[in-house]
Length: 190
Image (cartoon, rainbow, N blue to C red; front, top):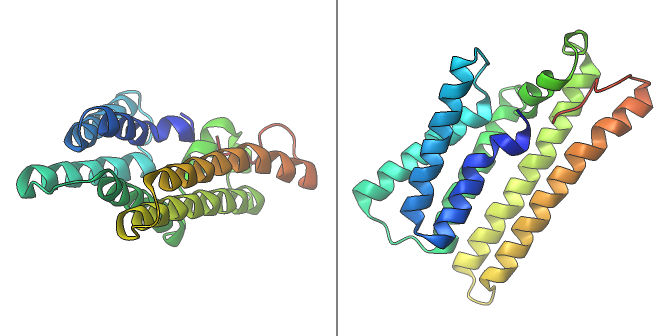
């Protein structure tokens, strides 16, 4: 499974939050997270940090919305979700298990998994994703709390950060392979 597939619950959330209602987005994202976890478990695959974090995040936000009935604006619900996504990525770095590592192991031969180059590559890719999620969170906060900043700036910053992280994830492993003379996907993360 690729990182982008791991982000599917977030994509479902953003689409349904805008088209239907924040609760629809949160609950559908929770359902997608749960379904992805069940499918991985049934196939005997390890459930990844991102999927566990997504399930916990969307489960907690769905329960909070059902119990407390907050008046979510687009910016506040995005702030909660993007802030949670930032925390998932940051915690994965802090505990020494960058979330991209699990995805990289799906496409990289096992003999490279213990390589310091492989680990460092994934730390850097995860750090870029974490920075992108931080930009998204900051843009959401600015859109919510700074009246002079329109929602379109929040959306543009989110898209730019996301596209930048995807580009880096595709570009950087090739740079590492060239630099260290590694064959194939020895340091890929997606």
